[in-house]
Structure formats: structure tokens, C-alpha cells
Amino acid sequence: MDIYKINNIAKLIEGNSYVGRGIVIGKTEDGTKALTAYFIMGRSNNSRNRIFVENGDEVIIHPYDASKVEDPSLIIYSPIRKYENNLIVTNGDQTDTVYDGLKDGKSFSVALESREFEPDAPNFTPRISGMMTFANDDFTYQMSILKSADAEGTACNRFTYSYASLKGLGHFIHTYVCDGAPIPTFQGEPERVAIGNDIDAFTNELWNALDADNKISLYVRTIDLKTGEIENRMINKFEKV
Image (cartoon, rainbow, N blue to C red; front, top):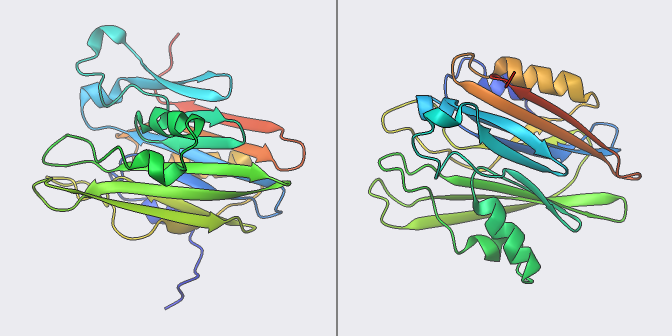
């Protein structure tokens, strides 16, 4: 068994109808850029009624058709925010929890101690989060998953992973193993995935591997470690005219 195997992200998810929401963080193969990606999927009309919108360094989820929003509490949030030399990426409003925690001098993991999995029994969708911290023309990153300790949702288990950035390597965490009733929560450590140099190739490969019926939006960002130059790619299945 090769515990250091680096997987092709498309191979990990193609043919899987529902991996839920996902975060990728890593360094390009040439070592010059940091990369992060976030995608959302949805099965219900409420979940599918969403688009990503850029607002400076921030990404916000908006309803595609505001008149059809049934419950905004778990579907409308800012998945990406920047605080000083940190870029925060999460699958819920815990983005704001981390942001506010950093402002108050807390660490990534300490800030998340105030949160737990989503209150959507019987699925108890985990909250997944990531943060990149930039310094000295390089970066480190952390990932977190807050998940139910049992099938009844009686307690929350919290896992935090800290990574050095290595050329061509990223880590991928998503909310679900696959579709189901209830939907099985992601298991184990974030998966090791290859990060190339071409943002368009990575974006297209990931988007095309996601289930055509359930995918909604994808956002990919690279940051040049020397210049700070940012490149973004955003795909919305539904676009406002």
C-alpha cells in the first residue's frame, strides 16, 4: 500500500453522484502558486437554486432565483473570505466564525470549537473548513471537519489537519462519501490529490468529473507566492442573464 500516493481528483469522484461540497488546497507542481477550490452540489430544488458571486477577495453564494428560496439558513453564506495573510474556505457560515476568531486572536481550530455539524438530521452534514496562511513567499494550510459522533447526533467530533505545502500536492475533503439515505459522512483524512500548473485544466477536469445532475457551482483560485497575483475561475451551472 502506497500511503503517499497522489491521486487524480477526477478519478476520485467520477461516477459518484453525490460527494456534496468539497474543498481543495495545495501547491502547484512548479511550486510558484497556492491553489484552492470550492464546489457545491445539491439534490433538492432549494439547494440547486444557487450561484457563486465574487465580491473582491470574497466569494458569496446568492440564490439564482430569490423568489424560490425555501430555507436560506444552510445554503446562503460566504465560502471564501480573506483576513490579513489568511484565506479561509468553508462549506458554511463558519467562514465568519473563523474570520471573527482570527480578529479576536484565536487560532483556526480554537475558533471552530464553538461550532459543530449542521442540524439537518438524519444526515448531520459535517462542516468542512480550510485556511491558507501566507508568509515568506510560501504558505502552510489547515483543514478541519466537524462531524457527528453517532447516528443520533448526540455529540460532535472535531478533527484538524495541518500541512506543509509541497510541490504538486493538494488535499481534498468533501462532506459525503456518496449518495444515500441518510447520506454517509466523509471518512478518514483529507485525500491526497495532484495539483498541476494550469488553472484552466484543473478547473475543467474537476467540473467535468462532478455529477452532471447534482453539480451547481465551482470556484478555483491561484495565488502567486512571490507577487501575490491572483487568478480566479468560476463556473455556475445557472447564470443570471
